[in-house]
Amino acid sequence: MRVIFMGTPDFAVYSLKALITQHEVIAVVSQPDKPKGRGKKVVSTPVKEYALEQGIPVYQPEKARDPEFVALLQGLQPDVIAVTAFGQILPEDILNIPKYGCINVHGSLLPKYRGAAPMQWSIIDGEAVTGITTMFMAKGMDTGDMLLKAEVPIHPDDNFASVHEKMAEAGGNLLLETLAALQAGTVTRVPQDHEAATYAPMITKETGHIDWSKSAKEIINLMRGLDPTPGAYAMYEGEPLKLFKGEKANEEYAQGKMGEIVDVIKKGVVVKCGDGAVTITELQARGKKRMSADAYLRGNAMNKGVLLQ
Image 1: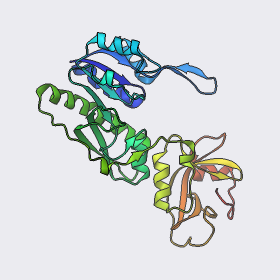
Image 2: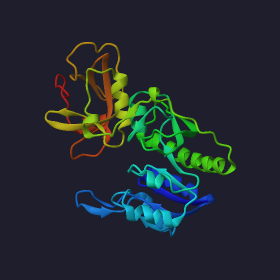
Image 3: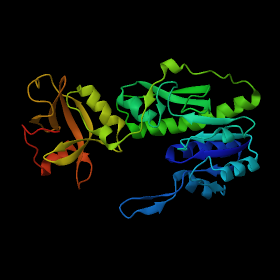
Image 4: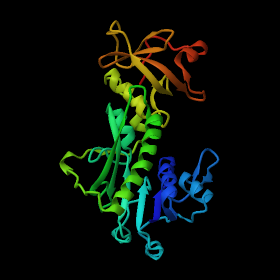
């Protein structure tokens, strides 16, 4: 098949790698390059970098709905447009171009977790299973008819980084299965149950601000879902402290205010929360490297009675 691929971050590179093994990728579309880091150096998107390495033409429209860009895609005459984490909503003029339609690789088992951050929210919400859904793209956000699904387990020791890797690989494989089924005419369109839909909004810095009135499990899941970036955090003596790993503390820690450091032990810092306490075992202070709480405490004091806010 003649495929135009649209994608931007690392997650989408897996889909592109899969496509070029079985199909003719005639063009790649990615978000415009943006400045990053303290030096604000303009950096290419991961999808653009990989496409150029493979000798595939890359287009980076500011707005996909621009008439000149739509005309360009029409002139390429693709059989299908495959989309993985592109970052723009496509207008109907583009959705109607390919013979086989526009196929999206979405990082959840739709209709759950529509939106920008389905993987993070599935971990934050304590899900044991997530997955990939391929679907026909429609005018709304993640509302199109579903095609195929692949489940991906979320283990207790998984974080966003590990789930991201498993999901990216599954997405590439499922995209190939979907295109093969489309060509063979063996795939069935399944409308989504919009009443069962849930929303996974964009992750912001404030998403990671820990509410110590929540249970230890909820706090641990928040840390897992935002690990490695942007990281869950609390304020310790006026400075942000990123918290990456923890475990439910022994039942003995029942007293204290929410967010209070009720003990400092070899394993870490014990903090009062909604259903007892949570022991923070991996953290990062401002200006320092991420490290185990044990290593941090060997060189830095954290005092009982202080509130993490």
